[in-house]
Image 1 (tube, rainbow, N blue to C red):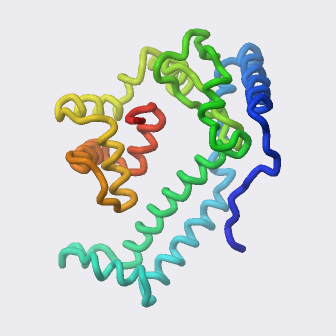
Image 2: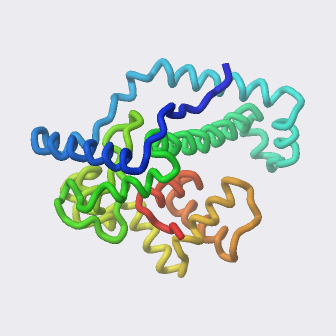
Image 3: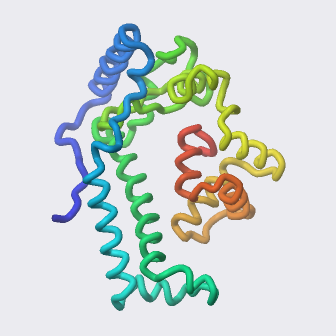
Length: 251
């Protein structure tokens, strides 16, 4: 059976969307009073999906072995991008294909995850979420210039805009309430950005170019991306996700 992206059968007007979000946020405000802030950070134990994840892993193994050994675009790609002799001895073709499949899967998951936010609210989901709140429901204060989109639970329900302080309090605890500067990865990025005179926009642009293979990027974008990737150990897709989480580099 071919994959089919979920799409809502109901099209809501803007007033209905805002009404829906208002009710949603009010529910969480009440729940927080009753049960505390933890209701905004609920995660299902990973082991519950162990069998599913094992099936996905087995499928990746199966495809990797088959694609590495059959004639076609993937095998041609490997041949067109050879490894140094000693490295070739250490990296089997099926492992190389597995790595390519894993990266493709990451990009697919990122796109499908983004689409879940649009299921109820459509293409203006981010704007709707922003219009639905006038203060941070965690701190009670202003959202600030760069509020964070936070998902209380990853089951398709929309995210909620929180202030940076509120988001850090939910995600990391009280020791991080003063800001993201205490986050190790962000500190590395900020220090390099200042030292190398980089910009968040160029880092994002370079990572996007690495992901898509595009050659349409500005000077220093690729070198900026490579510097961040090397220093943090993150993949380009993970750098983009991190920048999105902290609302950095959006033009």
